[in-house]
Image (cartoon, rainbow, N blue to C red):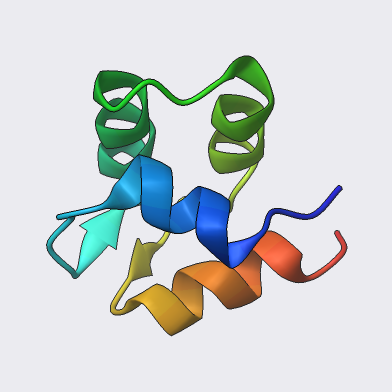
Amino acid sequence: MTVSGVQLQEYLAGLDYPVSREDLVRWAQENGADTTMLHLLQALPPEQFDNPEELTEALTTPT
């Protein structure tokens, strides 16, 4: 499953980078992300993302 850039912008608006997976999940929850989006974020590797492009790459690359 992939996620669109629009969805990312909606749920992660205002997020400061670098950011960890745990911070992404917490931020998305606080911004009303649906269950599908939260599962996608929770499935990310436990690493730090330095910018939106790195996060988008991780979310759109099949595992």
